[in-house]
Length: 423
Image 1 (cartoon, one colour):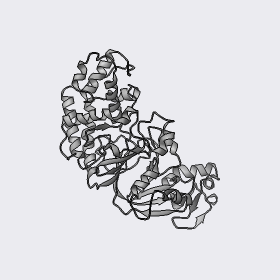
Image 2: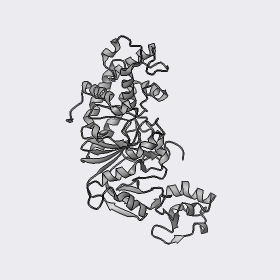
Image 3: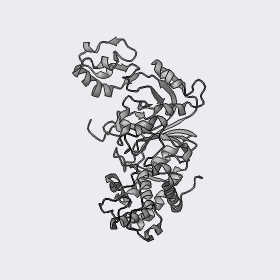
Image 4: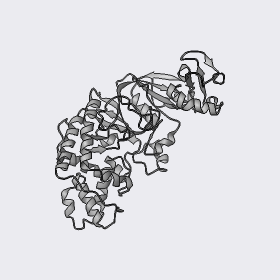
């Protein structure tokens, strides 16, 4: 789509087009990867799924035209606010087949934001929850990161009753972020949005795949940044940051002196220094940052099979995890700042696609060796760690997410957020 200011009509067309999405009809956001299929069946309430979506030609969260898309969305919500916004939906059990005055209120609400056409209010039985209303509600849920049940559950009820004025504020507040994150993006990029706990791999502004991710805890938030992928390291060592040594590793070691051995963590007197026996050190009288804690490659390694590196002052990266159960929950704020990627193998395959010296069949052979191998990435792949609680895409979607790190209204764009909760 050309980078032109999106009109209210084109935004509404984008919202309406989402009603025909096969994924929404199935109650999920992306088609699952084959390797994910069996596991996915066990937690069908996931709002988002890891999967390849290249055949759907969907615009990425941020592209060169995103600033203008946001301005179009802002104009649309300014019009909604000027017309009085929308009224609160009554708290009632609403799902397909229900007949109630509250269904009319739901229909009116979705018309106001463009998920239904105005003439939908004039149908023969507007008080009956029908197929078209269910599709519209699923589209609303999709754009708000809610499991697309087609029913007004508690999360949907909360989201649908957020005032139009606040939605307008979110769009206005996120416009400078979108513009900053779009600056300098090349043709291939990796977009991580912290509030939506998702990652997109993008080619020429179109999403190739979406991956669920785990991001920083509220007390250890993930920073936002712009960089480029430098290398993929297979079977990496984990060099524990001093903050994690102090908060996590030492307390566990002092409680159980066999913990470090069990986790295959070795201790050195400084980076590159001689190895020391942690049992001989009085940890109550020394600073833990004097010592280097390094976990060996293997099944216990916190980074699991692979990590993806890119230059940044925050010393964060993307990586696999040996705690894959975390991807089965919707609120994936569980890391110490780095980003854990669901289904990392197809992610790495995409990063290294077409590069001499690597093909997909090598992944398992390399990781099975447990030998550390750093493979430089020869093509340009831009990385953005973003904080977007509202964004509009060039194909007409307007998306909202909760402000997990409480950064809206602060002018925050790039950097390390302050902890939200006590450590």
